[in-house]
Length: 158
Image (cartoon, rainbow, N blue to C red; front, side, top):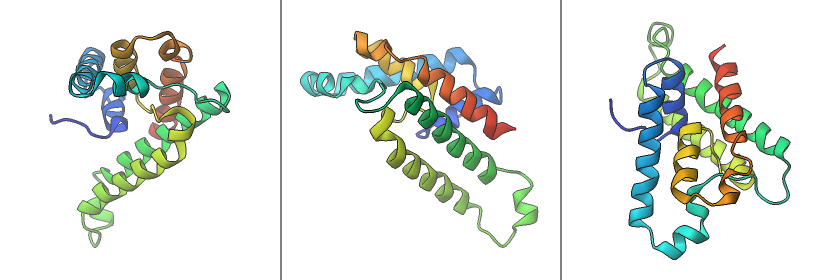
């Protein structure tokens, strides 16, 4: 299995039992460590190490809602684009349009949620960045970046 640039894909594969929690979390921690190794130390600190937080001007409820909706949109799009029955139903639609749909959904979710939470949508990615950055504010609302994606992915899988 290759790398997942889209964190919702990793989370969806975890929920579908295609990846173990250990593998998902260790991958996220290693990925955050690699980013820290390549990034200038002052820039890494200034950007909060990529750790997700609810940004100023938004409530915890806003952050939770953004994570639920963002994860739902991404996971639903991925599931729709990779539906095995799709080829039979929509044989006139090229399969590579599914990748484009995934890219567009990632783009749109990021546009909507970066100002609110920095776009977590994957608990392992949020955990990896919080562990590597390891400052108090990275842990303040960390629960949002677990509860929101679990709810969003569960709704999309239903």
